[in-house]
Image (cartoon, rainbow, N blue to C red; front, side, top):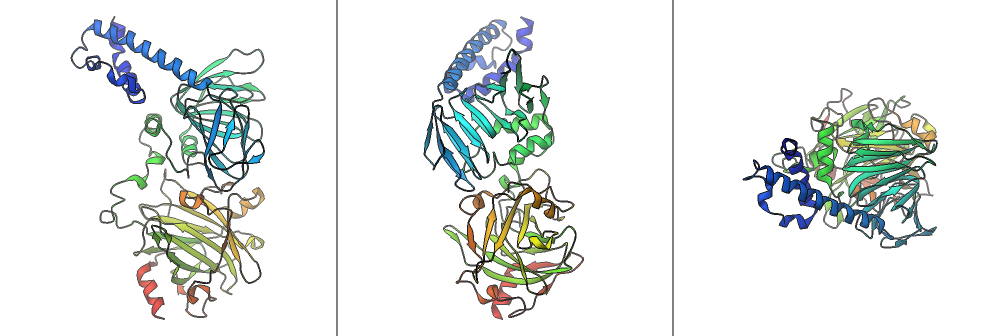
Length: 498
C-alpha cells in the first residue's frame, strides 16, 4: 500500500498527460485528481486500477490504429517535384495504397496515413505503405503519431509518439526517439531481442543485426534533427511539439530549445521593445582569399501581403574580403535582401537573396576558394541577437547555394537543392558550420523558389541595379576594421536623388 502512495505523483503525471490526448478521460471524476482524497489509500487503489484499465484500452485502440494503416495521402511537397508513387510522379493529394511505394528524389514530402498519423520523407528516400505500418527501404522518415515503421532489421511499435528511422548510404540503420517511447524488436533471423527506446535515445543496427545497447543522443544530434530537413520548412508544426520540448528540456537542462527560438518571443516580435528586428550584418568571405576586395551591390525587396515590391537600390559597397558591415533601419522581418557580387574589375561572380529575421541576423556570403567555381556562392543566415557577428547557438541556421547561369545576354540564377560533394570543400570557412550537401532554406524560400531559373536582371529594374559598378554611382568603401554601419533608408534616398 505504501508503494502505491509513493508512486502516486508519477501516476498523476501520466494521467494528466493522457487527459490531454484522450477526450474520454475528460469525464473522469475530478475527485480522482487527489486534491481532497490523496491520503486515502482506497482512492489510490481505485485510481491505480482504473488508470491501468483505461491505458490498456487506449493501448489496444492505438495498436488497432497502427494495424489499420492501408493508405497514405501526400499533403505537402517541398524543394522540387521529384516525388513518386509506384514510379509515377505524384502531386499533393495523391494517395498511395497498401503495398505501394512512395519515393523521393531531390524533394521532400509529408504524408498523412489514414489513421491521421503523419510521415515526413527526406530526399532520396523510399517507403512502402502498409508493411508494418511504413517500411523504410532507403533514406529517412520521421513518424509523428500512432504509426509503426520498420526496416529489414528493426521494427518499431508505437502507441503515438515522434521518432525518426534512417538507413544511411552504408546500410547502417538508426531509430531515434524525440518524445514518448518506442518498443523495438530485432528482425534478424533467430533473434528475440526487444528494446525500449525513450525520448532522447537511439538504437542502431549494422550488418543486418541490431546493436545491443540503447544509447543517449547527444544534444547536437537531437538539435540536428529539430533543425534538419525532416522538421524545417513545412507548413505546420509537428503535433506533440510541447512533448518534444519537455523531453528536450529534461534531457538537456538549461539548453535553448531550437524550435522555441527568438522567432516566437513576444518581445522580439514587438518593434518598440526590439528595435533590431530586420537588421543584419553582412560579411563577404573566402577561406583562402584569391581576391582582396569585392563590390557588393545591395538591394531591398520589401514584403507585402501579396508578394514583394520591386528592388530598391541601397548602394554598391567596396568590401575588403573577410570583413563585415552592419545594415540598419527601414528593414522588417520577411523583407528580402538581394546581393550581387562583382570583382573590382566589374566581373559578375555571385548572386544571393536572403530573408530578414525577427531579430538582428548575421549573414555570410562565401565565395569559393577555386576561381573556376565563381558564379556559385554559399549563403549562411541566422539570428545574432548580441550583434557580435556570430550566429547564436541553438537557433535555426539557413545554409544554401545559388548559381549564376550565363544564357546569352539574359543570365539567370538558380537556388540549388543540393551541391556536389567535391564542391563542398571549396566553401568551407573557419567559424562557420560545415556546408551541408542538402541546402537548408527558410520556409518561404523552400516553396516555389528552389531549383528554378530566376531572371537575374528583370526589365522593371532601375538602371542603378542593372548598370555595371561605377557607371552611375561610386562604391561606398567598407571600413577594414569591420565597424561600418549603414542606414538603409538613408542610402536608398541618397541614391534615388542621384
